[in-house]
View 1 (tube, rainbow, N blue to C red):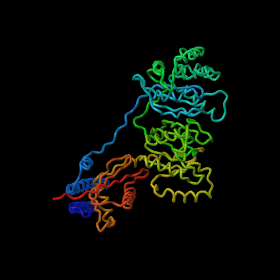
View 2: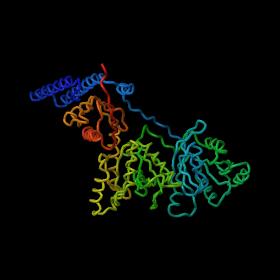
View 3: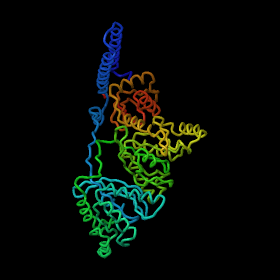
View 4: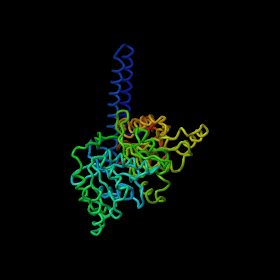
Length: 524
């Protein structure tokens, strides 16, 4: 940029700005305007200076060969999309004992494979909400874990979540396996549903043909009205079931929550058993998701709307990411895929790391997944209460060695189990999201690069020196910068530019993308 044809204009503008600053200082010594007025005047002068510099550099850029995409980038106006507020939707819960096909039915209603399904009982453990639509009616569909009687351990926690789902629903679809018939557990669920007083639609699942409809007829004995024969696997009869379910749903929901305009989506990710579900429960102030000592308790991503410091956030608890997706199988394989999708739908990933154990390759891979997805990042070192003093210097060395490329991510030391320092998570999330959204004005960006290149020129390459002509920020979320240059910009120099961008403009907690477009002068 120091060799730009319009550098003399920029130098003249710099000289003018310096003269103005000197005049302002003299006025202040003589008892002139108050400091706030001077600050305002200086800010206005700086803005005008940046605009003039941008205009001058654009004029110089016209001497180079630019294609249509270059021109579109230079002419485009950056604008932030506003998120639309959604209305509170009626809630339809799908309940039943384990392995009757609840999650398969949920996927059939949604029209896509969203809930994790496997041919064994107990795959779903948490209550998971999905937006759904049928015949023009929009509603919230809630998948639940299997309800069982007199169980202990993790199964009892799953049953509790199913009961909570019933209490927070406007209507219920009760799924029964028609090939088995009504069991003692089904009859206990019927008692639970009657006590709740909610409208119930009875689904006789696994009816794959006309011969199975006779089995479905026996379910009239449950006293819940007409059983709808359905094959969730093949889609048979689901239309009639949904017609009845939508009819049972009230127009105005008593339990649906009104979604505020554009709450930020925060994905809690990490390897299995690092405390993601415990942290969500601590932040929510309730036992929202099932927590157990068994690694891999969570399978489906669980959304929870939580208000922190007056600001709403969607927190998404995800399944633990195991060593390699292709080495997993069954429910764990599909859980890993859902976790990757949850990261891509989120705006920021909070990666939990077990501070009491050595940093693993798995931890680094999870962090890299969030960075590769272009999401804002916070690294939370959990289980700090289990870490002894001897472990701390080792942890610091591991971070220094393994995360040397991600020193820009905010770090929070906490304990999800006790709640120690969990309040520090929100400021870190806010800083990272602010950086993820940050935009640098084009004039200011080029002024920064001009000073940087003047002090630290690009190294010679093949006897020639690449010259930066112009730079602009193409987009945010994450910040993406495009540099126009006369030659190739080496990777080391790009990292140097990125480091200085972070130091100057405070891009803490967000990945930065820098692309270079090499352009030659027009032939005369």
